[in-house]
Image 1 (cartoon, rainbow, N blue to C red):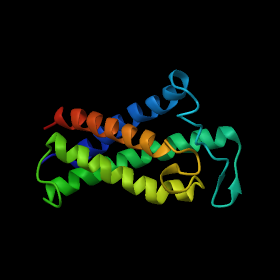
Image 2 (image 1 turned 135 degrees about the vertical axis):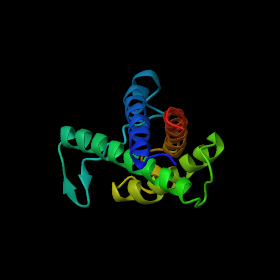
Image 3 (image 1 turned 45 degrees about the vertical axis):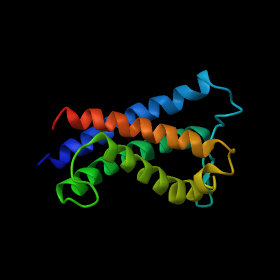
Image 4 (image 1 turned 180 degrees about the vertical axis):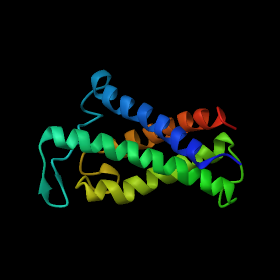
Length: 144
């Protein structure tokens, strides 16, 4: 059995890499395909650009840590996943993408899977979550 704290740590490592990539992507890609999805309101309250940026990083890292712990629990209890195989973690990355795209982005006013921000935001989210899953898998395997 792997410790739950390792899941949190591995999730945090994946979240840090994901946050770095999210911030670097607009610098190296066309704005046409990677729009700025920071919204300046949340549940009806307006925020400054700095508040949105810091809040976004915090939420991204917090969710990454939480999802890392959830995966460890699912494997430990043999719910859905039975081992730390990379295919199961990539599938878990899809589940995390579905949860964030269906729940979080509408709460942020960006629509389901960021549809209000652009037609390729869903793809950007999918790719970044698969990278998260890969980094998470690498980090978990440091402890398994």
